[in-house]
Length: 331
Image (tube, rainbow, N blue to C red; front, side, top):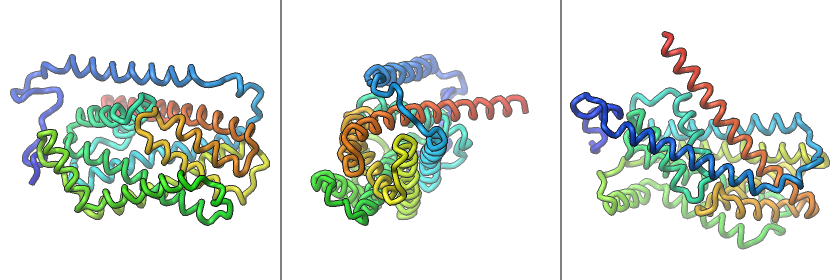
């Protein structure tokens, strides 16, 4: 039995004596500083967009709506993976799905802050307020991130490999993603993952972390393999809205290409939301099927669209959670 399973976790708004916690004001301040950092980072992203290049852009809005729906499904799949991993780690009395979606969507926007720490720390901090063990949250976040890299990288490389145009993709980029996926898969095996976690927690002088089993690896990789297809299809549909000449024969390549570039972005932790490296990889891969001017426009439009979907995901998650709380309060 681990330290987090030895007894009931303390109510986040009460101390051991049942009185209001003295740290509540500080928690509120930290939360709002977190929100402010997201607003500033996202505002900087909006400021740097070359909006003039998008003027007069012809868009097939039906395809955009379909792409947005599929992209939202991918984001909610992430919430499902998080919940499944936590349950596999022994977490009980998890918050409702809508409450976890609210936390996940807010933390998802923190990806626009440089570095990987803000969105990970934000998710752990907010979820811990619902009584979930921080140890389980830390482990589940690492599992989720590793599973996404491994599954998306593997699916993308497979789809690109079956396309005859794979020879036009940079061997260096293919090697980076292949090595990243392979290392992630090895790291995710329970013997290796648990040993690394124990070492890390020992260095941080924390209690022994939750141990993962093969069921966690299986479920997270399987779900994110589906997610890889969803994410790639969403981008391919968006491209269809921008470039009507896109054919069905291009779809597998596009699904693989967009997923591949996303993994490159995830493997670049110091860049906000993988911007820059992800965009450059997308551009290089789109040159296989598009002229340079059109490829550049698609990369820019897809970046703006993805940011808008992130905001829409947040708005829907927050609205549904408020509606749930309102209904619970009325009941």
